[in-house]
Image (cartoon, rainbow, N blue to C red):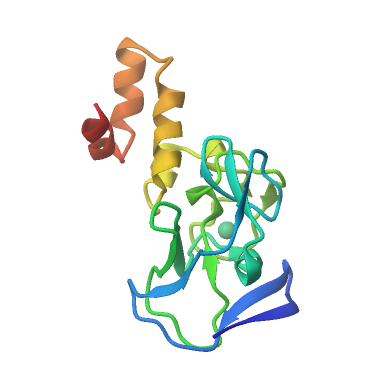
Length: 171
Ligand SMILES: [Zn+2]
């Protein structure tokens, strides 16, 4: 169903779908993996200090700042973020799962609103992160990062936190 193309892109290998998907459809399920405590360039973060590896072809999914899939580490599914045509490389937004990446890079995805440095959610503003589907563990880590702030600083940070509804839900 999904085919790995080696050296097809600047990033090296990529995972290409041979089938069309409608927005919201499950593109793949993450079923086989092992959990490790430190990230590598081949892991996906599922919680603080929890990273999964040995993901099969999923490891060939590249980053995009305008991704066509969302990796949901709670449901362990990869969903189509929009309609996807056969032959398209499958991509996701790395900071949607990664807090602090093992191998940061300067993105050359060509998206109109490319974030530039892809180093993990820790290094992006909440305004940028709010444009994307972001996993629960990353939202919690954003809250943790905001916690040392107090008074007007906290209000300021929360106001700019466009995931404000999540803040209210957790509080
Ligand atoms: Zn980009």
